[in-house]
Length: 238
Image (cartoon, rainbow, N blue to C red; front, top):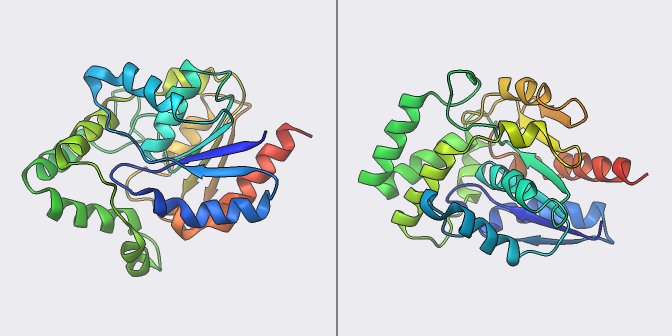
């Protein structure tokens, strides 16, 4: 294990993961840590988009936040030898509820958000920032710390559709190696109930919850996350 790649969430810039990168470098000084922006992705070309993303990345551990975590799981499923280990941060198996996966965002809420972003992207991003930080005692500072990626509004809309459609339950139940899943107890976007549901998918994977944190977990609790990730990696290689 010589390299970790961090993937941000939907619409979020790579620098939002810089606090976690610095915490990981301090905790694991012999390991390289990169942050890669999420590329433009869409449902009609998802296989090609994921292959292209994989080619940009060094082999090693993937750590993904929200949509970045869901894509990390998909990359592990397709390229398990290249990305044998995955840790997800505030990332659900299905971001939007399914008939047999209720621990997710209600369908109508997601449809409304999708429509709002299509009609008024800048206004909706501001509301999204509030949702990311909701539940944190430092919500105001976290909102100010959020930065947006460089994608066009239409590209973000395509990525939002991917977020709404991805279903990682099979991939999470059959990983090549056990995964680490980190959740936040006050998350307004990924219900904390998803933690128990994901734990039930694969007994050997590790699931941890920071009870006081929001969806902005990497910004809010980088030291806790770095300790959890490092401990998990060190245990796997003991």
